[in-house]
Image (cartoon, rainbow, N blue to C red; front, side):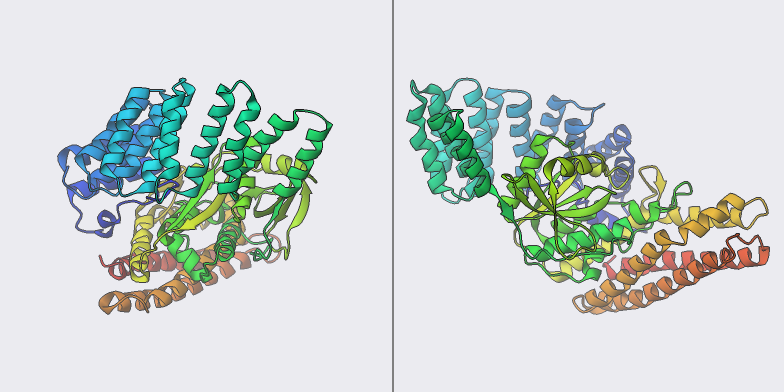
Length: 577
């Protein structure tokens, strides 16, 4: 089962049936809407309806997983014991669910790291090993967490025995085995009369797992043991820093520095994929992530159209392509730089929000020189930045207003290993179903989106057509600049993506995709016409109040909004609904 957040994968089977949904699907859709708005108590109520009234529905396990997540993470509703109970119910009542192993891993995580419940953790690990005996990755992850708790509580012999099982387990992931070996070395150091007796154990970690973070930590431990804090140790640390230096070459440049934030973000994401050997067209990146089909319109902030995402496009795309990934937004401190260093050691560039702010890629780190390499939008190569300057600029760039996981400073995202991806036709159908779902969302972060956004736009244009609509007219002229240009580009990518997927879909779905591509080409042109008319009202640096002009603008806006809504119905057919 993949690492990283799994909440972005909604139950698409429900959302495909726009006009003939069951009660369970309607409850689930309401729950999802409340969840996206941060109304978690209401979301729990609707998810609970699915579980209690339709326990055999295909959405029931999704609903339980979301309830458990809320109780695990929400500041107000957080209740770890309740979260554990829900995860256990999911694993028990839905043993064949794709969430079953992940649910039990979360139980172990809560029991070991947060509740310090040793006996509970023992029982859960036993259950995982019994039920998922063929999945070494899941079993060893759970065992390692138990071993760490045992070490914390002084049960050293049992912790060592479990670590040995992990190291000797065929198919055990290298990072997990390396961390188990490192834990054994640390226990040996802590229990030995002479710490130098633990050096051979640390050396085993370095020899057996040379390219892991655990090996780096083992080297550091050896240094402290053998040399102590003296001049010779300082020299060793300097050399170690030089060896830790990592620079990823040939990371592809991306985006125009003057482009909208959303274009910078998806351009950087495409560059990340190219860097790990996966080449997608720009239309595929926009289409699969859902960004090509979204629409956000904030009457108080014109830039929302080109900055606010209805869903996290990074995790959505990674999940669809079968990648594991890491995503953090926990503030900026010394540990944040450690996670970047770990990613670079694995050969992965790191996406951050930096400076201006702009979406940028960290492509290297030289600890001995205290320099970080940053590739910014439009740059052909990375620039070297002093660590202090880097941390200051990174610290000043919160990613708030984009999507909920990116609401804190110090946001970073990295693509990791790729599993077995779905076939192209399956990815296409799920992506088109997601596009239909986005249209049904009413708001994101309190801002109108989907169908509600088109209604908000038309309301704004109607008010602008009135004599007293000076403020609305000024707003729309500003919105016609970079925000609307970004939306036009998104619709062009939607048309391109639909052209591409019409070649992998079959029958009526293929024809519907081709037809909808033509409609989105028309939509892109209609938005272009509207943008030209809006900008034309301010050619003399004063905005025209001519009611005839604004009546025509209203006609254009109504026409393109009608086309957008018609496209949603065609997308439903292309998705198989």
